[in-house]
Amino acid sequence: MGTTYGDWLRAQREAAGLTQEQLAEAAIMTRTHIAHIEAGRRVPSPEDARRLDMTLGTKDALTNFLPKKGVEVADYFEAVRIFEQQAVMIREFGMSLIPGLLQTDRYANAVLSQAFPPVSEETHDKRLATRMERKKILDDPVTPIVWALLDEMVLRRPVGGDDVMAEQIMDLVRLVETGRIRVHVLPLAVGAHPLLPGMLTLMWFEDQPPLAYSEGVRLGMIHDSPSVVRDLQTRYDLTLSDALPLKESLAKLKATAKDYGHHD
Image (cartoon, rainbow, N blue to C red; front, side, top):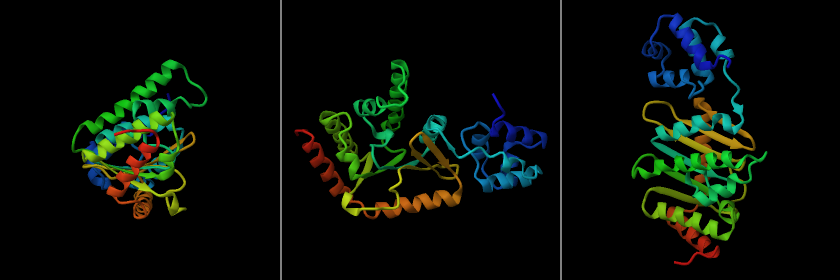
């Protein structure tokens, strides 16, 4: 395996005789952030990389060594899963699918069954188990706070068939009615909106800066540049402002589940 960004940063820090705490203080970062970078769980923003170069006297070495921000979804998925477990607040946007964190077993199975190129049954089962494992963070009744903004198209697309959709939507209803999550539906009548291009996850933490994760076809991107994260947060807020209020969204979910054949 080649040298990772975290490996290089750790080597430069140790060569300078600094602890993670000392480097964090000098570079105006948190020790936890440094630890996540060195462990490969986080990619520094260009601003962070420049401060690290200045602190360590490495000219532009760390800045130029920044990895590409766009990689295949699978390459960043494990990091995103870890961040979900650390987050105190998560806000999801689903453009075409229910966000993975909120998917039921059968809905997730229907989504993962469309993998391309096709995968073995063993790989499929492992991916499904991993996705269901992510949902366990909702077992904690308080943390993380989770909001989901769903384009109405998410509810209209019959992933897995009517029965699977009814079950999936009623699971969202259950989570909303117990107060575990908030769901807001963005009506199709809104038309174009700032989040139209795709899926987005925003995460906040107790001891490190917020980040965002966006995903497209075969491409996942973790964003932790403060300016980019602020831009994505603003796009989310603007889109949320056009969505239905919580009670109306809940009614929309129940009505849609009924259309799929759910009976009280």
